[in-house]
Image (tube, rainbow, N blue to C red; front, side, top):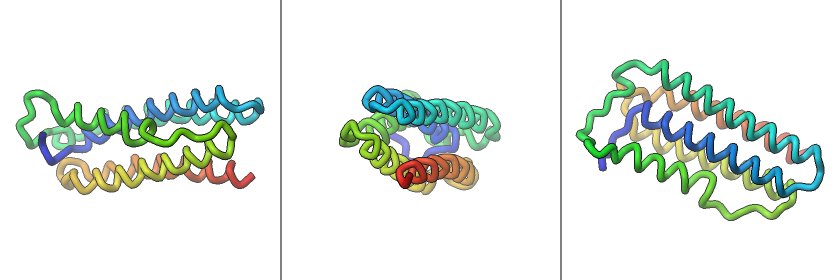
Length: 155
């Protein structure tokens, strides 16, 4: 497997993480009793869907060099590796929260924090010429979720 990624690779993973996040929030909405909590979680799922679209659009705007792989990868192992990470590390390899709204929010906050730390680490594996600065845009989007979740948890 190659050890250098480009911004396009990271956007692929970010899109998958957003898809997984939407699933997480939809499943969590099924567990809560209060309708207002259910609606909040469904709104978060919609926001994850919107982030997926934002990231896909940002991906489309990448320059050719930010999508160019510098490593010979005929079996597309980079993409497979990143998909596996997105599927297991951020939303699905977590201790499942209890069914309380606070438990779900706490797990969601920790998950969003983990995704930011993950992106910060991935940023180090993307050179400046391959779009390292674009990863900051992903991180900013994820930080907005933490603010929303923390605000709701404090209510």
